[in-house]
Image 1: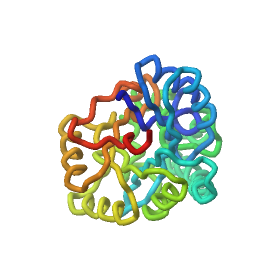
Image 2: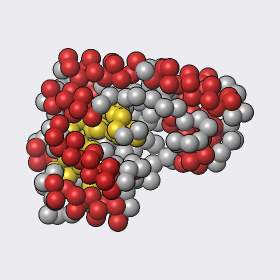
Image 3: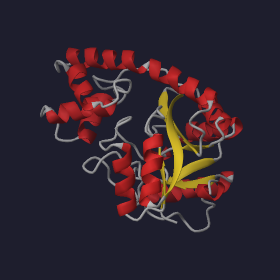
Image 4: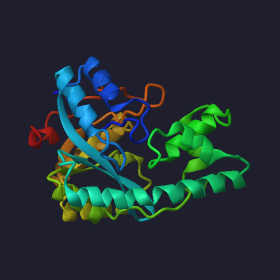
Length: 276
């Protein structure tokens, strides 16, 4: 099945409106799609209606920001009930800290000689409650400071760089708990992106499974072939469901287009076997 179970719209840090993401996925041959905006459920109704019109199956989702061993981890929830009180209240709590983080990032970039970065980032954020690092990066690219978003992150927005700001997100146990209380399946998103040692990666999955997490993104737009094989092996060892995702944000930012992910290794049990 051509399933893409992690992508973003303007409700968080994507470039396209929810319905436009769905239409693009359908045009690319997707048969099953999950919209998983960061800490936000506001685009799901629009996306679900667009999926009905396009004739593809839709899975309501979300991507929750988590703090684990001084690293920001992302946990995707698939097949969630968007009206579940525990999930809605938890996400509201996570979003409440984003505004102060954005202000602190603006101050940090000003100290590094980049003025008005917060105002610039807000011009790129369609959802005022979700000003993210991606919006700052887009402003810096548009201002000519750096040539592309990846270079901005490497020079300004990751740990140890001038625009990075420490922030405490949800705990892993909270995020997985909210997803499970909403009837969903918790998935570790793009695990190869995290700057974790082998020991800390093991600790992450130990804690994730103990909390009730059930799946890992084996195929991700952020993964190389070698990394896909590594996390396929992890899925086998830990008896985890395997997910497949583009992590699409926009045509000029994402290495993989929505609906055009690589296939999963055939011996893995796909997460959509539990969603359909």
